[in-house]
Image 1 (tube, rainbow, N blue to C red):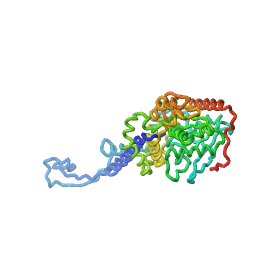
Image 2: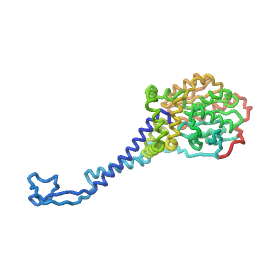
Image 3: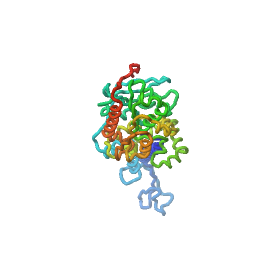
Image 4: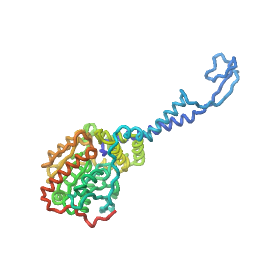
Length: 427
C-alpha cells in the first residue's frame, strides 16, 4: 500500500533500476567495441616487435612498422572487466529479484493466488463502472471491504476465504484500479470515492452493512461518514478502520516534520510527474520488481519480516501493476484529505486496528481515532507494519468477526442481511 510520502522512494528505486540497466548495456558495449584492437608496432634494433607506446627511447624514427589485430582473451584485463561487470549489472537489473530476493531470503509457506468471483457492475452517473464481487453465505452479515491505494480487491484474498465463512463479504475495486473504470471527469477526490462507496452499498445490500477500510480505504470510510451522516445506523451498522488515519497522511507518518516540509516543493511535483510520465514510471516500476528493489521496499513498509515470500510477491505485483497515472492522482487527493471533525460525531460501533511497527500510519493516529470516536475499540496486531492485516490475517479476521458478531447481537439479529439488489448488472 503506497502513501504519498513514499513517492520519493518509488522514483529513487526507478532511477536506480534504469541506472543498473544502462550501466550493464554500457559496459557490454565497451567490451564489444574493444574485443578486437588494432596495434601499431615497430621493430627494435634487436629485431623484436613492440607496440609503439612500448618502443625503447633509443629506437630510430625510421624503424620498420606494422599493424595487426589483437583479439580479446579472457583474463586479467580491461575487456574482461567490461564483460563481467556488464553481464552482472544486466543480469541483476532483469533477474536479481528472482534469484536473491525475496525467494531465497524469505520462508516459503503461504502463497496467495488470485481469487475472483463472478463480478457485478455498479454503473456511475458519468457512464463508468465499478467492479464488485461477493463471497460468503447470502444470510451472513454484509461486510463491505475497501482496499488500500495502489492495490485492488485482490488484497482481500484471505477475507474472501476466512471472513466469508460466516459473513457476506463484498469487495470492490477503487476507480482506475483492478477492474474498475477511471472516472470520466478525472475526479480522484476522496469525496468522489466515498460517493462510489455509497453506490456500492446501495447496489448490493438492502440491510445495514459493516464498512471495513484499509489505509486509504479507511480514509474513504471516514469521508463517507462526513458526507452521509444520515446513513450511519440505518444503512451502516459499524465501521472497521485498519492501518488508517484521520488527516493528510504526511501528518501521521514517521518523520512527519520532514514530510510536511517536502510536500509542496518535492512530493507534489513528483506525483504530477507520475501522471505526466506514466509510461516511464510504469517501466521503472517493473524494472524495480525484476531487480528485487520493489520487494525490498514492500517488506520494509508493509511487513514485519515474518511474511512468506509468496505474500511479499503477491502484494508487490499488485503495486507495480497499478497505473502510475492513477496512483499519482490518488496521492494528490490524499494531500487534501482531513476527517478530523467527523470523528466525535460517528454514532455507530467502530473497531480501530493498528500495528506497533506501522511507520506508514503511526499507531498514535489509530489511538487518536479510537479515543475520539465515541465508544470505539482499539486492537493492536503486534509487531506488524502497514499490511499487518494481510500478514497476520487470522488474528485480524478473528477480531473483525468477534466485533461483527457483537454488533449483530446488539442489533437483536432481527434485520435481514445479505440481500443482493436485482438491479445490479452482471459484468
